[in-house]
Length: 460
Ligand code: AMP
Ligand code: ZN
Image (cartoon, rainbow, N blue to C red; front, top):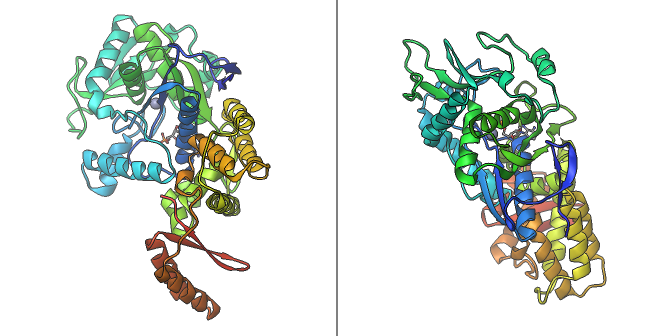
């Protein structure tokens, strides 16, 4: 079946053709591990997960790579400002290595809670310094670099098609550059290697052919994607904010070093907005997954919420929308529990409809609609189970844990739920919340419906 993706490079939806038949190399820009990821970042990684699952669903053998940035990402995109990791070190009074380890672990926990399947490799920038230096040396040999008093820079004027991803001409980009360019020859030029400040010791610095320092942020992605996937590789993903600088610069670097296109297809998710606007610390609306869990939401309700929009559509987060997603998810679990155990194959007609939807540039809302349509079709219960299980390879709601498995509630859980009902009738909200937590510890979730409480087994 045809598989098509919107490619930012060509600005059109194209039929996907892998470089090596049957195989796909996929690289996704990952987190900078200086703080917890927020739900906007998670939207981005859920998109990459749906993409990876869809490729597998289509029978491709996928090699997936997501970098972990633990050095070089500055607070300012124009090569000024502080390294985000050093900012975190000062904030938390810890070593960079410990900060990176802590937030990487937290990221993996969030990843698992929203059922993002692990990628094959998560290379760390600090573990690939030699590869980054080697790439810079190649660019240097090919005449793409110059030195200033604070580092080695990429000369974007040497790339005749610099700006091809964002569709901005170099002149427009220069006019759009936000800050002064220091000693850079052009505002679009960018740092490949930054020297450590004179006289000061940095925690993260390495000896290099150019002097002690650290790599620029963009270099890690070109160096690590080349190492694990070779260049060119098939698909590169990230959030839409990465197009004009980070991804443009990655393309330029690989062209400068290897004289090839880094990746054939570039895919980007639109941003998650909160209450119709930008997420920002000053507005206090930068939610992490844990904040949603603390409010009683199932992490997978957030996954369902993300899938309710296609990845290229902007998506507005509100708690009302999350309530609706959670209600839909729990309805799905209830219906799935009531089905018979799966037997036989997925229904070919329904499977084809689902497959067509997801292959159409990952149209998850359409795929979800096909799933609901399947429930109301006249397929047998066994066929529905088998078809649902098949669809869940892409949707990732963990339905194998619920299909055909009615909830068995132990006496202990039932007693706690009864006590909670009583506490609520007496308007003893503190006790009611305590009992909810106890029920949750036992692996169940209570929802308050107009008709009373409903108990669900949590999906891990
Ligand atoms: P960062 O840690 O800021 O580099 O972001 C990690 C990834 O999340 C990048 O691919 C960003 O483009 C993406 N991202 C950041 N904020 C959002 C958002 N609000 N919605 C969707 N994706 C985002
Ligand atoms: Zn990157």
